[in-house]
Image (cartoon, rainbow, N blue to C red; front, side, top):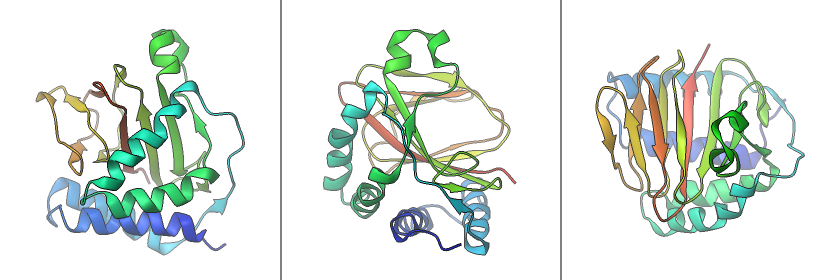
Length: 197
């Protein structure tokens, strides 16, 4: 099956963004190499999303506008904007247990993965949107993770505390380290990539 051109543009822009900013042989460089090697090797089934997005989705245009005007993220933001209408935006499973502020204050879309636009089990690529003033819950998972920061926000990792990478920053979370993120006065948008297979 052929990958949709809009998705190919986003993945290519993410690959180029990371290639220009992470060193080969470093943990984020190795993770990115694994992800894009897998994506180049095959394409999964493509299933467009269909559902009403969560309330936080209303902040997407503002976050994308911030990414579009930043030189580092502009190409990726333009590619993402072209793909976005085909995505299914939902909430993190179990988010109701963390209160209404979090439940209605975030939205996630999976571009590539078991529940993604392109369905496959070896790679996860997605986007998270966090409404102003909302903290995404602390969480951990076995696969390491790379975030491409597309709008303002703060990031937490248990071994280093809070930091602000800025628009165009890269956040790398090693396997099983507790991490989180939070938006200040503007929405936070980030693309995340995980090698899982």
